[in-house]
Amino acid sequence: MHGRDNSLPPVIKHLKRGCLSVQQAPDGHVYRHRLASLAFKGEDVHGAEATWIVTAPVARAIAVLERFQPQDQPYLLAPAPSTRRRSTFPVPNSNTTNKDIAFLISWITTYCGDRSRPDGIPLERGRLPRLTTRQFRRTLAWFIARRPGGAIAGALQYRHQCIQMFEGYAGTSDSGFRDEVEAEQALARGQLLAEMGADEVRPTLSGPAGAEAEARLAEFARHTVFDGQVVTDEARLRRIVARHDPHLYLGTFVTCVYNPDRALCRSPEASADQPVMADCQPQACRNAALTSDNRQALADHLLRLEDTLAAGDRLAPYVRHRLEEQHRATAAFLTRHTPEIAE
Ligand code: SF4
Image (cartoon, rainbow, N blue to C red; front, side, top):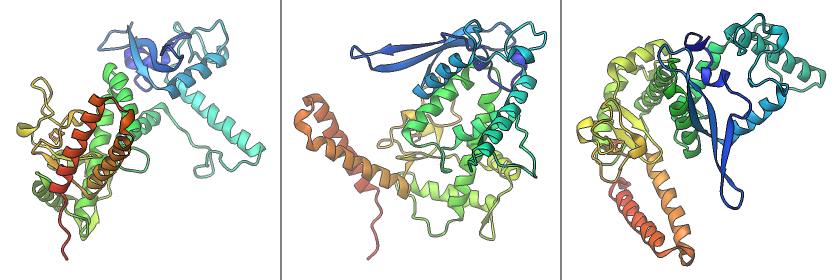
């Protein structure tokens, strides 16, 4: 299994009882959950001890797994003794995991059927679906690349989870999952940009790089839009993105029209392939453009700042000063780059 069985992350299969620890504030509030397991890199089949910061839902899942396993079983995902043939290592291989998934689907279906619940797992061509760990990986990559609802991950909470999963899990394993997520992100971005390119009544992008964003979208649309219809074939769209990537990155507050030479988010040691959106400096960078959604997000942010400042008496002077500065700069940026509506 180790290093070769790549269908489920080794870090998960090697989770052990007691792998979770927490850090608490003096009032008892838990502010950090840490997960200890083994990370596998290269051909090292033994793995190295590693720690990940995880979210509260992960901590709850660990607690549930600890209750599922017998007290004397240290591995949280150990197969049931009856299914664990003569294995030298008590963690499940892909076959066992696929059988477990099939068993879970069957159990859910029976449970829902017995209780006339409508939320069972739908049949596929009259049979229970056969899901495998490969599909699990693909689904996970899909969700990391897109937030629920179809837009590129932008909601902050979901973004945090993406970064945790991506850096903490994909980034430290040799599973190839990083490539899978990046391919899915490129496809999701391509689909969104192709739809934008096909939308003739879409408000124009503004900002320092607004005109360049429009030019790149128009060029991309030459490859992705035919008779007003966007290419829907996934494999074809993946090829088009690989060859004609417009290097436009849609964020919540800004759209990056990436040009490495003038990017303010890049450190000398970072790869020049793509922007570091987490370090974006939209009000100063010449790569910044604004969609109407970006402008709306900035306007909403201004309102939130105003609400906070309205209760300013309770703020420390330094914090209040910083928020006022932020409000001034954001309002000026938004005014500068909001297109005038023709009378
Ligand atoms: S600073 Fe922001 S706008 Fe500029 S290149 Fe980086 S991500 Fe793009």
